[in-house]
View 1: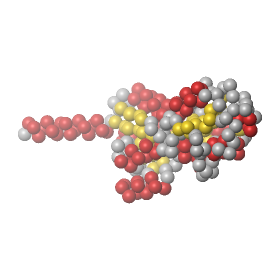
View 2: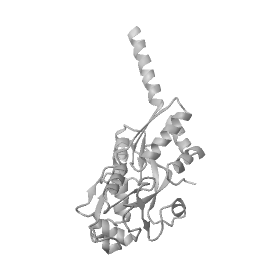
View 3: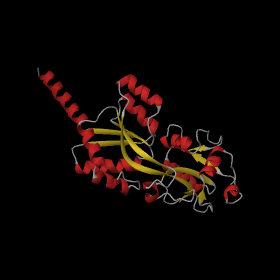
View 4: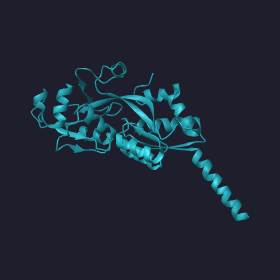
Length: 266
């Protein structure tokens, strides 16, 4: 009897722990923002623990499908095969929650004289048709292209919207995180890459079609490389997860979006 009572206590303890724990995984672009949300929420509601992990949009969606996280953070919509896996396992296609907006910055070294690129030039640089900075108004130096890995939502977004489905340059270097990209571009003066405009204060964020990546240009859909940021859940959120999401949408939660350098929903 005593052993059974102890087992019930342990089960109840685990249930309470699960109810008061939120696990978020996914987009590296959103990692700074997700950590700030987690810190802010736990300070306001100290009875709940929010775990945050990066790894890329693809890994976050895979973890959600496996059931190891409550929320997948994504910098792109779900792909067809991801929706199919969700439907097969949960009879659900997932629920998207818009949580903010981001401009995708194009980073160059601060000593690089190139400050403005067109969408056409950007496509030709990253696909390998333009390989020297002199062809876009820069020095006579070979362009070093740095990209995110294929499991990154940012990689997929850039390939779809900028390369229009074409492949990246064959010799493009791959960097796992946006923070790593910033370090590499700062290290190599002839490098070019891309990432969320909340990153890379030490780098030059190129104007695209003569429009800078700013909050105003993104909010009014002037800057040509902008996107929504998402939280995904398998079903309609309940309990602690629902409470957390409602807080993210609140004035306090959206103030953190601006603090992190992203664009609020309203």
